[in-house]
Length: 286
Image (cartoon, rainbow, N blue to C red; front, side, top):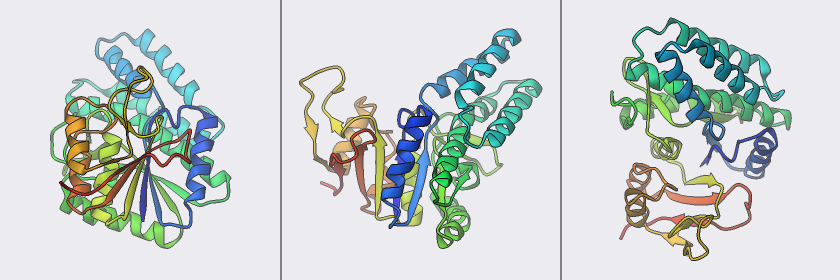
C-alpha cells in the first residue's frame, strides 16, 4: 500500500490536476490512497473570506466567493463543486460567533473542493475513485488550528471507510489538512498539514510507503528556487528530517515524521513536475 500526497501547486490548475491523475495511474498496480491539498492559494483566499464575513464586509466577501467559485469551475464534477459552494455560503451566512471551530470549518473547504476535482479527473481516465472527507476518518484532539491525531480512534475509522473501497479497486481521494474531534467538529492540523494527514493514514493502515509529491525534486538545505547553493539530500533519517522541519524548513510539516517513524515506514519527497527524479528518501532512525 502506498499513500500519495499531492500539494496545492501540484493541483493548481485543470492541466496540473490531469498531470496528477496520470501520475496516479502509473502506480495503479499498487493499492493506492491519495491525500490532496487545496489548490494553490485557495486556503489564503478562504481565510480572507472568513475575515470579511467576520467584520460584515459582505460586498467584498461576495466578490471573493464568486472568484473562488470561478477558480474551481473547471468542467470536472461541477455539480459537487456547486453544492460545496452552496454549503460554504450557507455556513458563513448563518455564522454568528466566528469561533476557532468556525474558522477551521471554513478553511477546510479548499481540500474538499480539490478532492472532488481530482477524483473526477481520475474517473474520466477510466479508473474508479471516490472523494473522501477526512473528518470521517482522522480523529483529532480539540486543538483547533493545530490538531493532533488520536491514532487508535483514527485506525478504527480509517479501516471501516477505506478498506471496502480498496477491496473494490476504488482509489480513495482523501482531503488533507484536517480531521474532526470526537464531537464531529472539523479541526485543522496546521499549515502544511496534508503531509501529516498522509503519514497518519500510513501509520493506521500499515502502508509500506508514503510519497509526498511537491514542486521541487526533494529536500534541500535551502530553497532551490532562491539559491543556486542549496544542497540536495538524496537520503535522510527520520530524525534529520524532523530536525529540518523544526528549524523552519517548510518542505515538511513538523509532526509528519512521528507517525511513520513509529512503524519504520519509508517516506519519499518527489517532484510532481519531474516524476522520474528519485527525490529524497526518508527512512531509518539514528
